[in-house]
Image 1 (cartoon, rainbow, N blue to C red):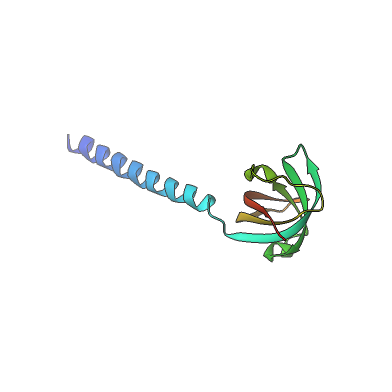
Image 2 (spheres, rainbow, N blue to C red):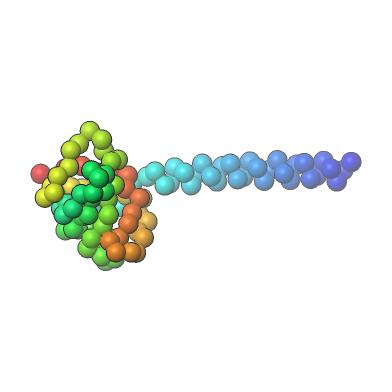
Length: 108
């Protein structure tokens, strides 16, 4: 009986720790940790833009980034637009670079 209760307590505590950790991870993924400014060079399917980076720390990884323009459905983006992009800080080093786009807005 003691073994069964101990096992039940361990399972319950493990479940609580996992739930707390996964919520923290989810919130961190949705937080803008880095930004850059660039110009849209190409748009495919009105959803993905190929952006030439002009300023931002991401330049140390590369100068072209694939950006999900659909994260801002209230804006219309066109080739030549200067934009500011917010992402979670993770960079997939492919060509072009890929990021988890969180925000996109026009820059004057």
